[in-house]
Image (cartoon, rainbow, N blue to C red; front, side):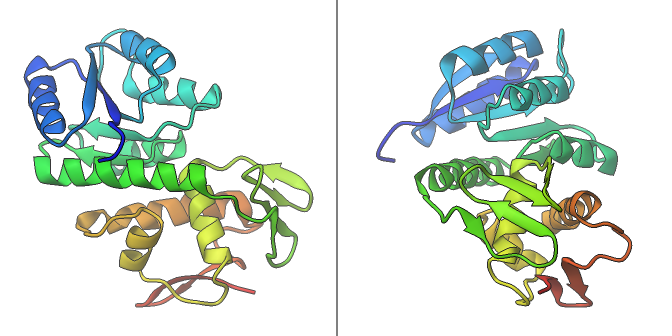
Amino acid sequence: MSEQKTVLIVEDEKNIVDILRFNLMREGYRTLEAYDGEDGLNKARSENPDLILLDVMLPKMIGFDVCRTLRQEGNNVPVIILTAREEEADKVLGLEIGADDYITKPFSMRELIARVGANIRRSAMISASSAETSMPVSGDLSINTDSHQVYRAGKAIDLTQREYELLTFLASHPNKVYSRVDLMEQVWNYGYVGDDVRTVDVTVRRLREKIERDPANPVYILTRRGAGYYFSV
């Protein structure tokens, strides 16, 4: 890689930290380590890493609170939540508070390295892009792509970064149907996909709850049964 990227590992199990550090350094990343949530939050603020691998169950401050605090402070560093639990509620909460991705322990190191790379590339592309100020959308929904703000009937809607990216992607290709795999590749920037296409469903559901007047009967993001999702105009 042209410029060395820094990954902050926030994890209280030293053996996992050691394995992650070894594999990330072998791929050319610089690593920083924190063994509790408070230290992780402080290092995220002071060291400005390119990505954070963030465990959920941490001493002093849980991972969700670390992520939530960073987002409230306007820090959009990519965050991958590490969780030992498979509960859907954990995944939904992680996405809702602004995490970019999650990976469930035990994970394959190859998959984790791929996700780290994908999220860092995606973040770099967002920083480099200079999109038009406004995007034509339907009904009373509008998107300001300079400020990354979405409005419905003139009122700002609070979206996570991933929800915003999914909305702008679909809205910029109106009436075109994208499968879950398509969206994982285009929006999540993964060149591979596993069971986590469910992430797309979770994100669509959360997005509908925020932009639709009646989420059970959406008018913007529609489902084409057996095919995928599309933005209706």
